[in-house]
Image (cartoon, rainbow, N blue to C red):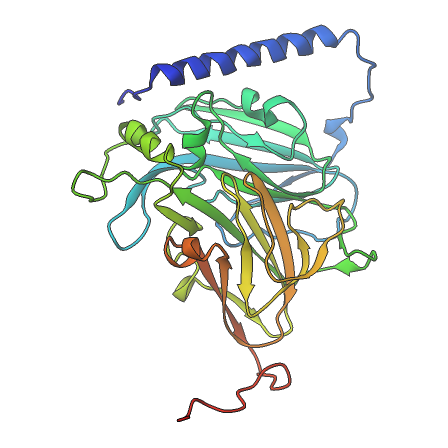
Length: 374
């Protein structure tokens, strides 16, 4: 197996984080005797539901309003390191992925449920990986408890106490940024048990849901300006790190590649359908915009205890955050869903399409005069 080249800075950073983890574990052990005991849920008494994850932009079947009490929701994800093609110019990248996709799959549970994830790192991989859930409560979001080397697996369980959409990502000591911009991130949605609500407490429901993961890539070039090619993730590390430190991505894309959500892969809807769009960006700020439509309900920072904004043209999602927008389509046509940093949308790739079928409404828009001589 190739050896991953690391700098002295990386080694020191990893040592520092490892030291911090040791202190966290020590502090937790010391405080067990002085903290007021709490009544723990008897996990063995809860029903278990095993969920099969699906590839983005789709989302596994789920209830919008929970039936019954809390459950233990079981997920399984396999880490896959693989070379992916970013566009038709020959740009490729050694991606680290959850379940083989960029972004990783979207998980859905309800507030009060327990998330139980089996994380598998096959022996065929080169690197150590883990997972940090922004939605969980505990130091490093579970990252210290899920470090798996090639050939290992681990199981993490945590209680979903905060409703919203949240980012999860890989966060190995000393190499967090590189793993995240290698595609290793995703989103989990923790729905309120009684479903989404608007500002006046009205139910907010959707007919279908799409999941968009925005990704910035940093692909090295050679002295002639050609995209460099590598035989393994470790071989690409130093060159990719140098491009990352310029803070200038070569690609900003949705769901892993330029055009991944256009053409035959465009999202589909019908006039009158209410569609939820979940948008995650684990690293950089983004400004989603639906050209020709609006955000009827928008949780831009994705937290359902906060009331949604209404009728937005563009909404701002900070890096390391996921957001949710719900819109009922009123006209047919091809809608462009973009990052409204238009350079990133039209020059670097952050654009998708929604193809909407139905009858045109002239009252909402019509061509009064076709193009004709002046």
